[in-house]
Length: 254
Image (cartoon, rainbow, N blue to C red; front, side):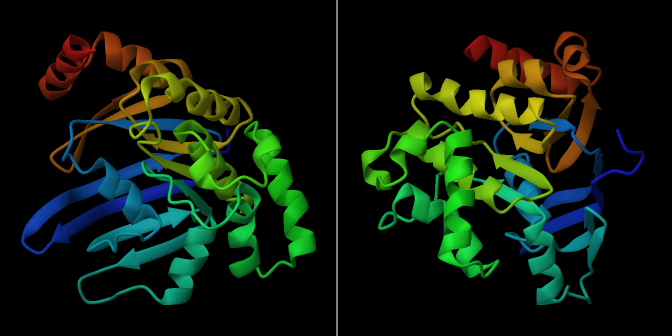
């Protein structure tokens, strides 16, 4: 691994009105590392992820991705160009697939290349086809989302994010909207990305995936990082009582 982190978060705060959701989070992710973020609903995991590419505006703190630092303070908001440059370094996959229903799979995948990167359609289509093939869906290139299963929609969404060739991939509970029998096909794509050295920050409840693929697991509670360690250590001997309670409850419900 390189000595320098590819993602650095320093003292990240987020308020929604009077509600203090993120309490000064600091975290570093190394290139090629897979970091899984776990915690109960409402602990701030998704808000944290969405702040990294300014889908949520942080209230305070500094986010650095691939050498670009963007600082927010109550007095100073970052410039639009900074936010755009930061977003180009990240690919985001959501719980809900957020595909355009009137566009085919290939059209969904290349839309960012056309509108953001200003590529011609002739340049964009081979890239889109390459990433559809990567997620095993080249045969669905001309199919609209309504004719795809949930797992296929999510794989198109992953291809769309990858097509922009981001430096890091952010996954916000990518399997939580899927039927149980479709979860595996999405996790297989993510495992393959991890094998290929894609830097990934993943919010998920899939503990098997975390145990198999993550370099590190981060447990969040009430807007703070409570504990972080290798998955084997986290799942077999968590140090903090809140982590223990969360994992025990999770094991009971599964």
